[in-house]
Amino acid sequence: MQWVEAIQSFKNFLKLERGLANNSVEAYIADISKLSSFVQQSVYPENISEEDLYRFLAFLNEIGLSST
Image (cartoon, rainbow, N blue to C red; front, side):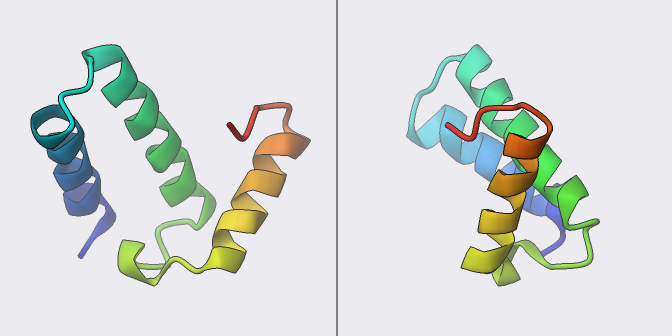
């Protein structure tokens, strides 16, 4: 699955299945978009490893963004 498709599916899940408010959905989508940019879309979403996530969180911390 490509990132664009995965992000859209996740957005639909958050809205339809979880019933989240638009602001919450957009915040989640912004975070996932940052992740896809971080891995430079060279890794398929289903292949993201735990190590990739740790590196992403460390990156966010380095640039002063919260990882929560």
